[in-house]
Length: 91
Image (cartoon, rainbow, N blue to C red):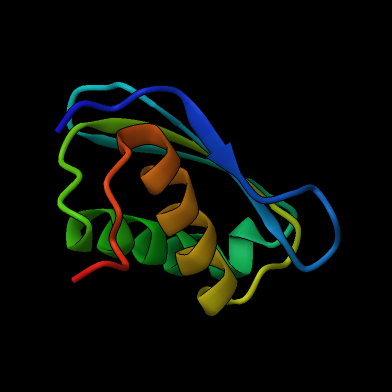
């Protein structure tokens, strides 16, 4: 699956900005004020969502502002759709 640079989300409170770039393997760089408490969970949600969408090679930069898991999944999905052109809602 070809990946182009794309992003989804905002830097508003309660949201997360996801930036996707081509990469080797899955790499997640997380910046969050709550990473000490929730960093592992945030990275797990991002990684699980990417794998569920069939993404195996991408570099992700995530800037979290207190997003819930459902918001993280939505932003990752939107960024991947923009990066690949794959319509995940069609099937």
